[in-house]
Length: 375
Ligand SMILES: *Cc1c(COP(=O)(O)O)cnc(C)c1O
Image 1 (cartoon, helix red, strand yellow):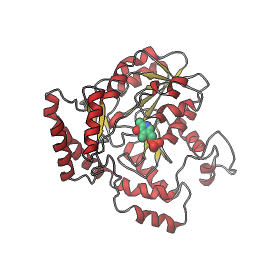
Image 2 (tube, helix red, strand yellow):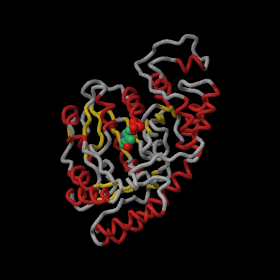
Image 3 (cartoon, helix red, strand yellow):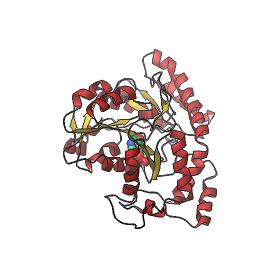
Image 4 (cartoon, helix red, strand yellow):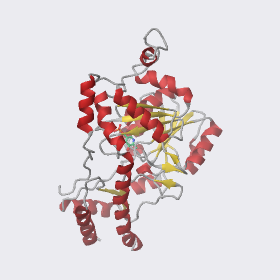
């Protein structure tokens, strides 16, 4: 591959911080670097409490435990998302109820939420696709009226805002990812963000194998014991040390990604005018973090040919997602609400282009040239 689809960006300070963690002699979770990262997130997002986890998947699993779901309870979410959004809730015996997405942002269509709600509905899980916010005011209003939890799968949206509010600070709970394909990374990694303080204490215990270990170490209780269900959801402090190097550069990383994103966006303006592609649409209330640049092609056939042609020239471009309601496990454990027309249509037509720091102007120029010859 001349230009791979993704290449993890390193700031250069990761190994230095890992060597500090090594020298500290604290390798397990919740050491000095984990504390720094948690505090950084609390400040950057403005959440009540942030807890590093070993993945966004793990953070979503904690939210599902916190939601106190009973078998058969329903959780509304888009079908157009990564499997972890649904898996976390299926693991608790809940039924994912898949709702269609909007054609403009590819986010859950808030106008379809009311009709998906039943007396078994317990939560709405929103996914800020490509780091572009869902229509949160409407979603929160509906959730409040029906007494539902709002959980943000903010795997892609760290650094983005909705009406000036950071994504991850809006729902009751949120999950972030530091997987190497995201903007700020630690290989595998994530965090749980707690906005409703009533969940803070329990979240901490669930993340620590269902124990009150953290309270014990703070001297708040005099015995350390099994107090809840839970698992081992915390990352090693070595991983947090790596992540700390990235957090220090978070704003610069976002700015540089936005530069690349805007370059792509300008080129494709004329192709869009000719009706050959559709570019991402960013609503005026949303500031995004340039997590992803995608194009929508006219149909599946043209998308397949486009990805193939780019591959022939050494450029990695990918599509996603196979809609969850169409997957073997989605069919077994979930149900749909209404027809999922946009989900079906857009998932067939979407292609993601390489967007990573280190992609230089020359390489971007190559992609532009190749795309011109194809169009
Ligand atoms: C990447 C991603 C996840 C999973 O993140 P991990 O950190 O790999 O567990 C979940 N949801 C969405 C929408 C994602 O993009």
